[in-house]
Image (cartoon, rainbow over the protein chains, first blue to last red):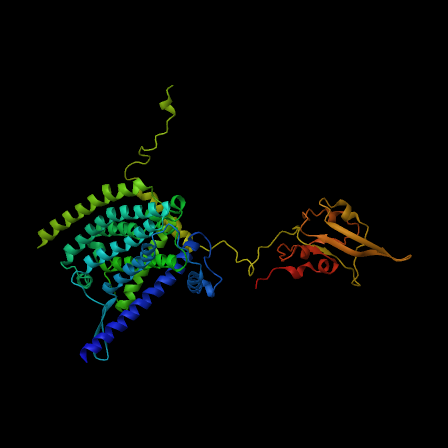
Length: 329
Length: 159
């Protein structure tokens, strides 16, 4: 009986988290188009529903009913598998995100996260990197030179930025003394990590944008030079899956920034979940805002920034953090 | 002067070290300012751009107080029309007035120069401000008298 109740709770939580995430993914595209539009002094989508609010549904239906093309010289199993890997990795990350503190329903304490893994942040790093395989394999299997180059660029970028990202996270872990995301949030009850670790915050944001393939670092899908890069041969629902994975990844990234640096669910007056989503959407807005502002870096500049600036900065940050931690204890 | 003097140094450092962060922040401030200012686009079928008083759009054949056409079918407009878009079949009653039996304007050929309006001695033909006539068939652009009498009905109002 106890086990069944446990299963039920986990199932309901999984369903709620997945649904909310997918809604955010769908309307994330709407938010992105709206913000980009207003930055460019346009309105963005306005026709489908009031202020274009039903646009994601229309886009989804269109995605389903488009013709699905698999190129002749594509590696068929890998070609089909790639978008699935992409979306699966992005969705899996939702498991460890702590959305809020525990609440009590019907006399039973319910935590607002699906699991509290002891190695939460390692899990995030591992699975997030796995998501990049989707792009790499997709580009490789398309049998298209643009796709291949896009995938290669994706892998090179992943290697150079994952490292600095991990270094930024390590300095946070050194302060909190735990790898669990819930533990990290609880550690920030007094002072948020953005104040204790400003350099790590900047590093994490930059590396995260590179990991998301967002604009200053959107090497794998540089439209102008690669004709959309790794997803050039994809159509119909497979393309939509790549797209959804990208936005799901963005949501997870925003949630991670909130968890690691912006104090997670901590905040005055409003309940924790509300604070969590306010902060998350602020980060998502930042992602779109900077996309509308910055041009794409040249490829060698991206690599230079990763290896010559971010990596030493991350190491220095760890060193300084270690010194301070030793001196204070 | 050697060839090297003409060479453009591509790989050299264009900006000074550390001078790149401030412009990036300036850019962010600029886009944020744009985000909070009002869009300048017009929501076309519901909102329309006001055109000038002398805008030259679709033609209208004016009628007098009794509802008959002012046109006397003199043919001056057809004569002056540079792309020869106007075709008139005149009709004259015995000892009576002269009026057009048929009056066609090919709105595809028309270049909207407004010469017909200037040439007309009785002010019968006039260019209106209607600028968004759409249709499916080339034949639909051969405007006859009934269409020419009321071009305002063709203002596009959306679905």
